Image 1 (cartoon, helix red, strand yellow):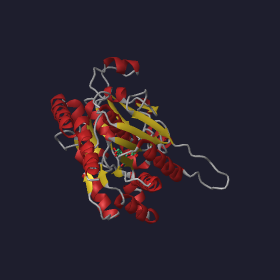
Image 2 (cartoon, protein in one colour; image 1 turned 45 degrees about the vertical axis):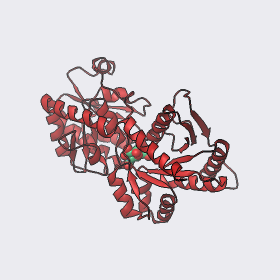
Image 3 (tube, helix red, strand yellow; image 1 turned 60 degrees about the horizontal axis):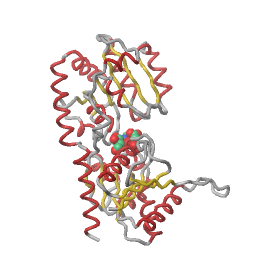
Image 4 (cartoon, helix red, strand yellow; image 1 turned 45 degrees about the horizontal axis):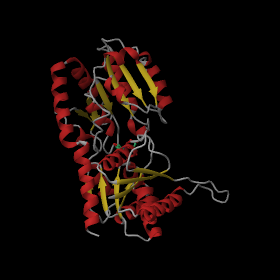
Length: 374
Ligand code: GMT
């Protein structure tokens, strides 16, 4: 199959999934064309069957805003015609599904469109009434629409109410990059004493991630355990969180390591991962941490409760409940038998529900369904 993929090529989970899926499809012998504003960051070296088509958005003096959407649609049309694409896989309803639909019209070809909803287009933009009809249009004019969790599927149905079936296809893990290793040397490298436990968190430090709850949880845990907190990422809340760490008197044990391209070693150093978001369609970081052997505590928000099976493969708390999170954290970090039991279950669960092979096959079947129906 000849597949065009458009996503934001930056470090967010949607870009990661779009890129990893493209790589998997290319490894299966399909021709993959990334049509993106930059080379996706997970493609670090040349790979067979992958072509990158960069969208260069010019700034014109007469226009107040650079025309990203129109330029992208034009590029998509060019690639559809030049490579006779069978399928376009657009990540995000707005703007990408709409650019795909426009690109298909400009090319005047019957290329099929699969759109994957990742969250922010629904849970943030869906509340904006000026965009709702555009989101609905992007969904309804796509041939197949998938969402990354049942929770996001339900949110889309209630907020956008499209006349379209939405199928849940979970995100998957890159099993080669996220592995369990002995962390003694890594901890030494970062100056973390061997008898200290490590709690970590990775995100883009948006308000929705509620980093303050991670700091409150950490403060409580630190009262009874020798522990360090590793905060990986950068974003609008970072400086406020630095100030909060110092106000809470825990800053000497909090390591803000900023935006990092390679995050696996941070998970590998960790004993516990926290995701305290108030909205989260899936939480790909949980899968990455889990596959490195790290047990997670997450909130009962969005799809987190589908990734973590409470008391089986990890633990869940209500949004904002840092007291409960701290109690669970202390239990996990002091009761080795309990930790190992959850860790064992979680590693088995990932193999069954979130394996790259199984999820890639689900998407491949969707592409085939569309092409066979042509
Ligand atoms: O979490 C973010 O802010 C980044 C965002 C993105 O656009 O990459 O992540 C969204 O898509 C990921 C991949 O499907 C999901 O794992 C994240 O849960 C989702 N983020 C939110 O819903 C807030």
